[in-house]
Length: 233
Image (cartoon, rainbow, N blue to C red; front, side, top):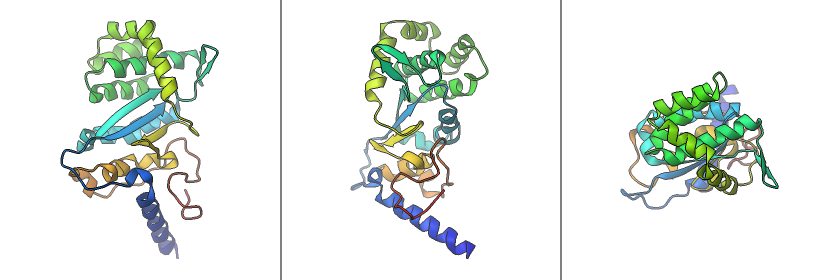
Protein backbone atom coordinates (compact mmCIF):
# COMPACT_ATOMS: atom_id res chain seq x y z
CA UNK A 1 0.00 0.00 0.00
CA UNK A 2 2.85 2.39 0.84
CA UNK A 3 4.52 1.69 -2.51
CA UNK A 4 1.25 2.38 -4.32
CA UNK A 5 0.87 5.71 -2.52
CA UNK A 6 4.41 6.78 -3.42
CA UNK A 7 3.90 5.75 -7.06
CA UNK A 8 0.63 7.70 -7.22
CA UNK A 9 2.21 10.78 -5.63
CA UNK A 10 5.07 10.73 -8.12
CA UNK A 11 2.59 10.32 -10.99
CA UNK A 12 0.55 13.30 -9.89
CA UNK A 13 3.70 15.38 -9.38
CA UNK A 14 4.87 14.64 -12.94
CA UNK A 15 1.40 15.36 -14.34
CA UNK A 16 1.24 18.67 -12.50
CA UNK A 17 4.63 19.72 -13.84
CA UNK A 18 3.57 18.94 -17.40
CA UNK A 19 0.62 21.32 -17.00
CA UNK A 20 2.65 24.18 -15.54
CA UNK A 21 2.67 27.20 -17.97
CA UNK A 22 6.46 27.49 -17.67
CA UNK A 23 6.80 24.09 -19.33
CA UNK A 24 4.65 24.67 -22.41
CA UNK A 25 7.40 24.68 -25.01
CA UNK A 26 7.24 24.60 -28.78
CA UNK A 27 9.59 23.16 -31.39
CA UNK A 28 13.14 23.02 -30.08
CA UNK A 29 15.65 25.40 -31.59
CA UNK A 30 19.40 24.79 -31.42
CA UNK A 31 19.86 28.55 -30.99
CA UNK A 32 17.20 28.81 -28.29
CA UNK A 33 17.43 31.55 -25.72
CA UNK A 34 18.41 30.76 -22.15
CA UNK A 35 15.60 30.19 -19.68
CA UNK A 36 14.86 33.33 -17.67
CA UNK A 37 15.00 32.61 -13.95
CA UNK A 38 13.91 35.48 -11.71
CA UNK A 39 14.86 35.24 -8.04
CA UNK A 40 12.91 37.56 -5.76
CA UNK A 41 14.97 37.54 -2.61
CA UNK A 42 16.51 39.47 0.25
CA UNK A 43 19.97 39.34 1.72
CA UNK A 44 19.24 38.26 5.31
CA UNK A 45 16.47 35.78 4.55
CA UNK A 46 17.52 32.32 5.83
CA UNK A 47 15.28 30.56 3.30
CA UNK A 48 16.80 32.60 0.45
CA UNK A 49 20.23 31.53 1.66
CA UNK A 50 19.09 27.90 1.73
CA UNK A 51 17.67 28.17 -1.80
CA UNK A 52 20.92 29.72 -3.05
CA UNK A 53 23.06 26.98 -1.51
CA UNK A 54 20.82 23.95 -2.03
CA UNK A 55 19.10 24.70 -5.35
CA UNK A 56 21.06 27.31 -7.31
CA UNK A 57 24.57 26.20 -6.39
CA UNK A 58 24.15 22.69 -7.90
CA UNK A 59 22.91 24.33 -11.11
CA UNK A 60 25.90 26.68 -11.26
CA UNK A 61 28.19 23.75 -10.54
CA UNK A 62 26.90 21.96 -13.65
CA UNK A 63 26.54 22.55 -17.39
CA UNK A 64 22.96 23.64 -16.79
CA UNK A 65 24.19 27.11 -15.86
CA UNK A 66 24.81 27.79 -19.56
CA UNK A 67 21.06 27.57 -20.16
CA UNK A 68 20.01 29.91 -17.35
CA UNK A 69 19.57 33.69 -17.50
CA UNK A 70 19.47 34.63 -13.82
CA UNK A 71 17.89 37.90 -12.69
CA UNK A 72 18.23 38.50 -8.97
CA UNK A 73 15.84 41.11 -7.58
CA UNK A 74 17.04 42.25 -4.18
CA UNK A 75 13.88 43.57 -2.56
CA UNK A 76 11.85 40.66 -1.21
CA UNK A 77 9.39 41.79 1.46
CA UNK A 78 10.74 45.33 1.78
CA UNK A 79 8.28 48.22 1.79
CA UNK A 80 8.58 51.78 0.52
CA UNK A 81 6.68 54.00 2.93
CA UNK A 82 6.60 57.48 1.38
CA UNK A 83 10.24 57.27 0.34
CA UNK A 84 11.45 55.48 3.47
CA UNK A 85 12.46 51.91 2.70
CA UNK A 86 11.88 49.35 5.43
CA UNK A 87 13.35 45.88 4.96
CA UNK A 88 11.97 42.77 6.63
CA UNK A 89 15.16 42.09 8.57
CA UNK A 90 16.14 45.67 9.30
CA UNK A 91 18.43 48.38 7.96
CA UNK A 92 21.38 46.04 7.50
CA UNK A 93 19.36 43.96 5.07
CA UNK A 94 18.57 47.09 3.04
CA UNK A 95 22.30 47.78 2.80
CA UNK A 96 23.16 44.25 1.72
CA UNK A 97 20.24 44.18 -0.73
CA UNK A 98 21.90 47.18 -2.34
CA UNK A 99 25.18 45.29 -2.38
CA UNK A 100 23.54 42.42 -4.27
CA UNK A 101 21.78 44.69 -6.75
CA UNK A 102 25.00 46.63 -7.37
CA UNK A 103 27.06 43.44 -7.65
CA UNK A 104 24.72 42.09 -10.30
CA UNK A 105 24.95 45.38 -12.20
CA UNK A 106 28.74 45.49 -11.96
CA UNK A 107 29.54 41.81 -12.59
CA UNK A 108 31.11 40.79 -15.90
CA UNK A 109 28.76 37.84 -16.19
CA UNK A 110 26.14 36.00 -14.17
CA UNK A 111 28.57 33.33 -13.00
CA UNK A 112 30.67 35.99 -11.26
CA UNK A 113 27.52 37.46 -9.77
CA UNK A 114 26.41 34.07 -8.50
CA UNK A 115 29.78 33.65 -6.77
CA UNK A 116 29.13 36.97 -5.01
CA UNK A 117 25.57 35.99 -4.12
CA UNK A 118 26.57 32.61 -2.71
CA UNK A 119 29.44 34.16 -0.76
CA UNK A 120 27.23 36.85 0.76
CA UNK A 121 24.55 34.36 1.77
CA UNK A 122 27.19 32.17 3.44
CA UNK A 123 28.98 34.97 5.31
CA UNK A 124 26.40 37.65 6.09
CA UNK A 125 25.14 35.95 9.25
CA UNK A 126 28.59 35.55 10.80
CA UNK A 127 30.69 38.45 9.45
CA UNK A 128 30.67 42.24 9.48
CA UNK A 129 29.52 44.14 6.40
CA UNK A 130 33.09 45.19 5.61
CA UNK A 131 34.26 41.58 5.82
CA UNK A 132 31.40 40.43 3.58
CA UNK A 133 32.05 43.06 0.91
CA UNK A 134 35.81 42.54 0.93
CA UNK A 135 35.65 38.74 0.85
CA UNK A 136 32.84 38.41 -1.67
CA UNK A 137 34.17 41.08 -4.03
CA UNK A 138 37.50 39.27 -4.08
CA UNK A 139 35.90 35.88 -4.75
CA UNK A 140 33.74 37.29 -7.56
CA UNK A 141 36.56 39.37 -9.08
CA UNK A 142 34.60 42.57 -8.49
CA UNK A 143 36.19 45.91 -7.77
CA UNK A 144 35.23 46.57 -4.15
CA UNK A 145 35.66 50.33 -4.44
CA UNK A 146 33.36 50.47 -7.46
CA UNK A 147 30.82 48.30 -5.65
CA UNK A 148 30.81 50.58 -2.60
CA UNK A 149 30.46 53.67 -4.80
CA UNK A 150 27.39 52.09 -6.35
CA UNK A 151 25.92 51.25 -2.96
CA UNK A 152 26.52 54.74 -1.56
CA UNK A 153 25.59 56.72 -4.67
CA UNK A 154 22.78 57.49 -7.06
CA UNK A 155 23.21 54.25 -8.99
CA UNK A 156 22.50 52.19 -5.89
CA UNK A 157 19.31 54.18 -5.28
CA UNK A 158 18.24 53.72 -8.90
CA UNK A 159 18.81 49.97 -8.70
CA UNK A 160 16.83 49.90 -5.46
CA UNK A 161 13.88 51.60 -7.17
CA UNK A 162 14.20 49.22 -10.10
CA UNK A 163 14.14 46.21 -7.77
CA UNK A 164 11.03 47.54 -6.03
CA UNK A 165 9.21 47.99 -9.35
CA UNK A 166 10.36 44.58 -10.60
CA UNK A 167 9.04 42.72 -7.56
CA UNK A 168 5.68 41.09 -8.34
CA UNK A 169 3.00 40.15 -5.86
CA UNK A 170 4.34 37.14 -3.99
CA UNK A 171 3.46 34.92 -1.06
CA UNK A 172 6.92 34.49 0.49
CA UNK A 173 10.60 34.58 -0.38
CA UNK A 174 12.41 33.07 -2.09
CA UNK A 175 9.90 33.62 -4.90
CA UNK A 176 11.12 32.06 -8.13
CA UNK A 177 9.79 32.56 -11.65
CA UNK A 178 10.70 30.64 -14.81
CA UNK A 179 10.09 32.69 -17.95
CA UNK A 180 7.77 34.88 -15.90
CA UNK A 181 5.74 32.05 -14.37
CA UNK A 182 6.02 31.57 -10.57
CA UNK A 183 7.03 28.14 -9.33
CA UNK A 184 5.76 28.94 -5.84
CA UNK A 185 6.07 25.87 -3.58
CA UNK A 186 7.84 23.88 -6.31
CA UNK A 187 10.84 26.23 -6.49
CA UNK A 188 13.08 23.53 -5.03
CA UNK A 189 12.78 21.68 -8.33
CA UNK A 190 14.08 24.57 -10.42
CA UNK A 191 16.56 22.42 -12.37
CA UNK A 192 13.75 20.22 -13.68
CA UNK A 193 11.74 23.25 -14.80
CA UNK A 194 14.76 24.75 -16.56
CA UNK A 195 15.36 21.48 -18.39
CA UNK A 196 11.76 21.23 -19.51
CA UNK A 197 11.41 24.91 -20.45
CA UNK A 198 14.61 25.09 -22.51
CA UNK A 199 13.75 24.80 -26.23
CA UNK A 200 17.19 23.92 -27.55
CA UNK A 201 19.30 20.78 -27.29
CA UNK A 202 19.19 19.67 -23.68
CA UNK A 203 22.37 19.28 -21.61
CA UNK A 204 23.26 15.82 -20.33
CA UNK A 205 22.06 16.69 -16.83
CA UNK A 206 18.49 16.97 -18.13
CA UNK A 207 18.42 13.29 -19.08
CA UNK A 208 19.37 12.24 -15.56
CA UNK A 209 16.85 11.70 -12.73
CA UNK A 210 16.55 14.80 -10.57
CA UNK A 211 16.03 14.52 -6.82
CA UNK A 212 12.86 15.99 -5.36
CA UNK A 213 13.46 19.12 -3.27
CA UNK A 214 11.11 21.01 -1.00
CA UNK A 215 11.16 24.76 -1.64
CA UNK A 216 12.79 26.56 1.33
CA UNK A 217 10.27 28.77 3.08
CA UNK A 218 7.24 27.50 1.17
CA UNK A 219 4.15 26.25 2.97
CA UNK A 220 3.52 22.53 2.90
CA UNK A 221 0.52 22.91 0.59
CA UNK A 222 1.62 22.78 -3.08
CA UNK A 223 0.78 25.92 -5.01
CA UNK A 224 2.56 25.64 -8.34
CA UNK A 225 0.71 23.68 -10.97
CA UNK A 226 -0.38 20.93 -8.58
CA UNK A 227 -4.05 20.05 -8.65
CA UNK A 228 -5.94 20.32 -5.41
CA UNK A 229 -5.81 16.99 -3.63
CA UNK A 230 -3.35 15.49 -6.10
CA UNK A 231 -0.30 15.36 -3.87
CA UNK A 232 0.96 16.74 -0.61
CA UNK A 233 4.25 17.67 1.01
